[in-house]
Image: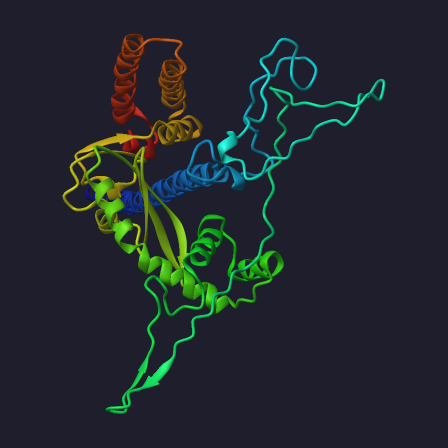
Length: 398
């Protein structure tokens, strides 16, 4: 009996030992499966994060690829052929030229006192019967012809005599008359050269060619550059006066664009009012350059784009043409189409109300009422998009 119990106990012990080994193997398998599952989950999270990153990058690249003059600061000249041109206003169907019943326009006659020469054209005989004609027409038909005088260069020679004093032997040279500089070119030639190269954007070589072809004057590119420098020195004080005027103006429109100065990258800054526009070339596109143009104590109001260099100015209005482009970009961006389309529509209503007021279709009070309603509507859209728009860039812009 004891032997049977002993055998049975040993068998049970062996079974328990086998079960423990099986449990240990199962537990090791479970741990391996758990580690493998965790590894797969981490890998799936990494893959999903990479997919989200690539999707965001694809949307960013698609947005850059679709950038044009209607949704960014890109100039219309840089638009590709795939960009639809703006629709022009439909023209009325009819024949070309002046329409029947329209008010005619002709070249106005110059007053008689401003005419350089008058030529009397009297007929000698009748065109029908050849009878001689005499007398004057009290109200003749006036026909004026404008012509450019023969272009020629006036050259004045100043002979500066050098005389020796019989008493001390000092040599004295005669001075030039007042208003005559040591340059070989006169003030009108300086002004015309600066006008050709500065206003009409002729190159130095083109200016030299023009003087040779039109006036028969031989110049060099260095002479053109020297005249430009003298004109710049002479205009320094008027330009400074214009700059002070702009800095004290109540409303100023500043802007900046890329520029090349001495073959290096620079920026051309401008500040314009209704009367005067001032330009300044600066190496940087920053707040420092904006303060150099407008003055650090500028107290007026500006109308500009959303460039951060003007954030230090308290009274600032945004240009609606720039805002319309920003709203259009939101309308084409993934995740903010709903807000962007409504902001575009609101901006167009604002600009339409201002245009109708300037054209005299509505009065100032009606314009203000329309703008007041649009201001509330656009403000609500911006606040909502700032909090709920899926696109991070749209939230920042709003």
